Amino acid sequence: MKAKAALGRWQQFRLGWVEVWSPETPIQTGEVVAVIARNLGLWWLNACRIVYVLDEPGSVSRYGFAYGTLPDHAGTGEERFLVEWNRVSGEVWYDILAFSRPQWLVTRLGYRYMRWLQKRFGKESAAAMVRAVNNVERGSNREEEP
Image 1 (spheres, rainbow, N blue to C red):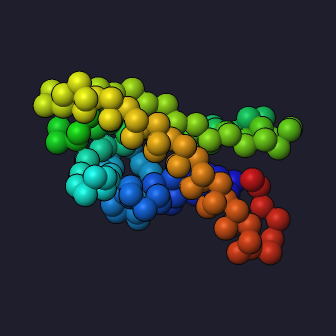
Image 2: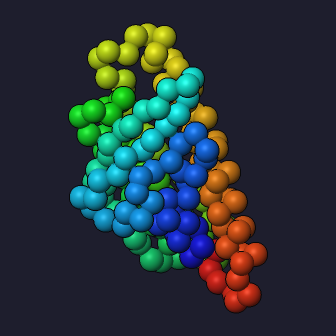
């Protein structure tokens, strides 16, 4: 599935202001990655560990993973990235589920700003996944699952 491959290449983080290091990190439980974000002229390095991976075949195939924040992350929580493919209808969904709270140093204003950035990331991440899947289509001449 193209969307699964894009998720496995961390394409949802190719936004210009957010990236993951290292993009070669395999999607496996226990792997550690750094989410690097740039905003307001500042750079944030946020360490995360993959806590589980989903890979469920079926009439609706599901693939995804979740990572949890490590101690020096700007927030405390978990974020799940999931793609689903309905084999009957051909529909593909991309979903992000996050629960978090800012570290104790972040003020009330910082909390609101963090939530705004999370919403921005969600919208731009979905667009990055669409671009990644469409680029795969243009680069390939063979028929492949969505």
